[in-house]
Each structure stands twice: as C-alpha cells, then as structure tokens.
Image 1 (cartoon, rainbow, N blue to C red):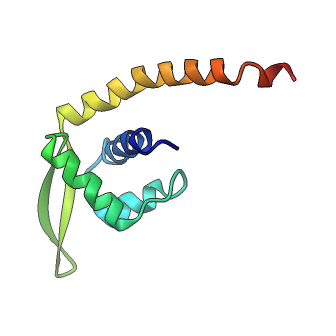
Image 2 (image 1 turned 30 degrees about the vertical axis):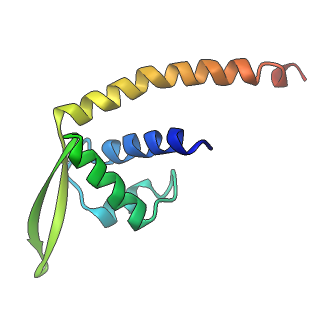
Image 3 (image 1 turned 90 degrees about the vertical axis):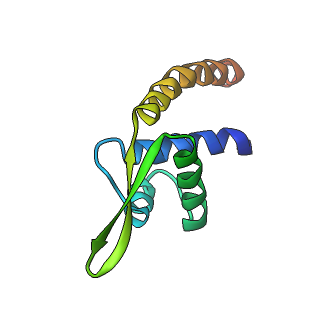
Length: 105
C-alpha cells in the first residue's frame, strides 16, 4: 500500500480508537489489533503528529503507581474522522473502477 495513503488511514484509525473514550498507548494498539498491526514506535509517532495538529490532547495520570499518558480526541480530530468518511467514498469509487473488469470474470 502507498505509504502516504496508509499513513492517513492509520491516523484516522488512531483517532477512531479514542473517539468514544480517552485511551492510552497499549490499549490503542490492542483495540486496533483485529484491524491492523501497529508497532509502539509507529503509534507514538502518529500520536505526536496528531497532538501537533491539535487533533488530540494528552494528559498524564497515575495508574498502579506509574504515570500513564491518556489521549483525548478534540473537535479537530472528530472533524478529521468525518472528512475521512467523505474522502473514503472517492477511494471506494476509484477501487470499483479499477476492479470493474474483475467482476465480469
């Protein structure tokens, strides 16, 4: 898959993982595991990029005696998910065009 396309998709996947409730790194990876493999290094790069883009905020809280970073989606992050849904319809149309000959076999 094209690196830029995959990057954009993974960004939205991470936003979707925290859409309904704040979450932390390990749980985000665990929640996404049925859909895509995501390494810790890739996840934390994505989280930093989304934070810099103001699509999420970070708070630190103590859990079992350790500090844990929790990520919270912002209005900009929610808007990005909605934009993605619209953009994805175009990707589906392109896919259907590219594979239309396959369906006649």
